[in-house]
Image 1 (cartoon, rainbow, N blue to C red):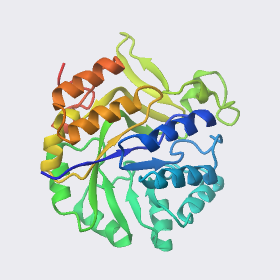
Image 2 (cartoon, rainbow, N blue to C red):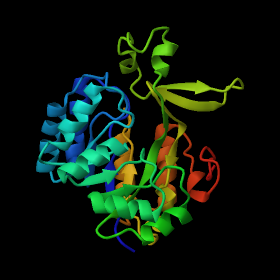
Image 3 (cartoon, rainbow, N blue to C red):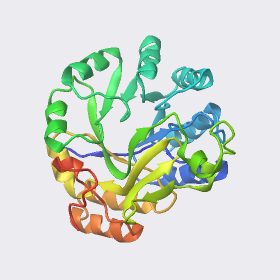
Length: 300
C-alpha cells in the first residue's frame, strides 16, 4: 500500500490579510506535502494580490512544500482573466485549473497544472486529453463514489496522479449571484465585502431547522464536513496519491496532525475520525464515497 501525500486546499472563505499570513506561517511548520494558494470563489476579494500569493508560495517552498496556485472556479470579468493569466505566467509554480479557460492558458504556456475539483472531468479519455495538455494531477469530482474513482485512477496516464477531497465542507456549486450580499440586503456590485465577516461562511437550515448548506459569497458548501479519514486504507489501495484537507478558520492544523498520523500508520483511522468530529463539534458525512447521498453521516 503506497503512502498518501497530504495536501491543503485553497482557502475558500474571505479572510483578513493578517489572518491569511498567520495561517500560512503555521502551514509552513505543519506536516503537509502540498499547499494550494489563491482565491477560487470571488474576484472582488482583494485582501491579497497575486504577488502576495507568490510571496507566500516562496516561503512555503523554502519550508519544503510543493506549492500550487489555484485559479477561479467561475471567472466573471476581464479582471478575473488577468488574474488567471498572471497566475499562469508566475514562472515558479504549477497551477490548479478550476475551469477550462485556465486549462487552455496553462496548456498554451506549457505550464503544468492540476485538474481542480470544479472541472467536470470524469472519463479516462478526457483525462488522457488533459494529461497531453500538461495535467499532472486530477482531483476527483466530489460526488464520485469509490469504485468510479478507482476505475479512473487505474488508467490515469503516467505521471498523472489522483487526489481526493478528504476532509472539509464540500464545494457544491458556484453562482453568478452572491448569496452573502442578498442575505445582507445589498447588491453584489455594492456588497461591501461583507463575506469577510463570515470566516467559515454562514449556515442555512431547512424549515425544520435541519442543517442544509453553508453559503460563502457566490459558493454553496455542504452544511457538514465530509470525511474520508476512516477510508484511508481504501484510498491507498485504489491508487489515490493525495488526500486533501480544506482550510477552516479553526482547528485546521489539529485536523492535519490527526490525518497525518493516520496516513503514516501511527493512529487508528476510526479513532482519529471520532477525535476530529469531537474537536469540530460536527459529525462528518461520507455518503458520496459509498455511492449514497453525500449528506449522509455514515458512522454516527
